[in-house]
Length: 427
Image (cartoon, rainbow, N blue to C red; front, side):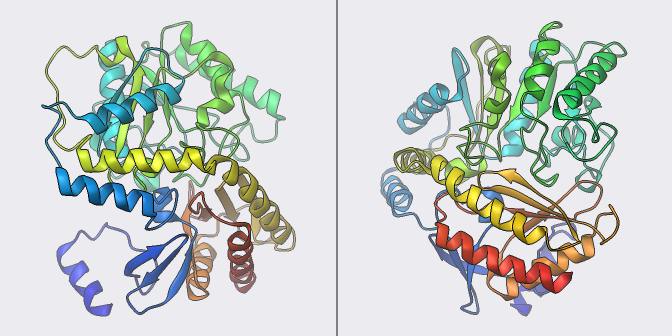
């Protein structure tokens, strides 16, 4: 692996981050486990950044991909594509957006980029509202609306971006308020902000902030925001790249925790729907999706082999009620980790819902982020056979836990026990 690491550094960018002091080469997987090039077996609690949603080497998806590859892999959107139409029909219905249209891309970054193109064109405005601590991808426009300095390499942008309070519940100027007053204060802040700017095109928001450390506002915040936005015709874009497909357990989409004012105008998705195949996309009301007045196609978005994977994966997810499993097993895992956290002064908070869980670490006796200990826990967990992720706002000190949604209760307990020992080794 040292040879591969040296070759990686020789030909790939310096800014292409790798986990671990001795980077890992994953060679194969099955279910909720993966193996490295040295034959070590790991329980996977990160799923390739929330992307292996159902299971590694899921037979139904593998079979669908293999059979489709034997027919045709690709033709582009210039030709009718039955698997693309079939998956679009299912997603349009599941989205909750009336008269929905679906456009497929190859990633969440590209999906959010497309959503911004649609919103700014539809509204004739290049002003966008985004949440503090947010992340929406690595393209030029997506970086331009990212509210997390650790993932924003440039301040240049084609958009004027204004950042709104509310994405982080337990930090910031409103953290000490109860949920009702927190929402009211954030709404007041939004109204004040709108009084000082030209009418924005849209608000883009992750219902649960992913890279930001699995933070979220109280349920109903974005519904309250939407009531204000609708007064000026401002669109709401729900970035469901990480929260979609039932991962939060309680809802199929993250926006449904904020659905009192109706569904979003635009919804973006990616990651888990392909279970590792490159699928992203945008769902929008027809008048928004159809607002572009010039030609557009996609060479790779919606290609037959990825659509076959998406159809098989979505069918498996729904038929096996993986959303319900995420709710049940995720609930057990969260409570288990909170019991551990109560004994450790360096764990500030265990948060999340379903199988989207964040463990925020701080220097004991302070409220200061502890990125050094977060990295140490990541290493210790790997040594004991558990893969997790990390993230966070001002500093990367949140452990991110997001296993495949088919995780069993026994595997949840196994992973929690490993993580407990890793945390105890750091604190």
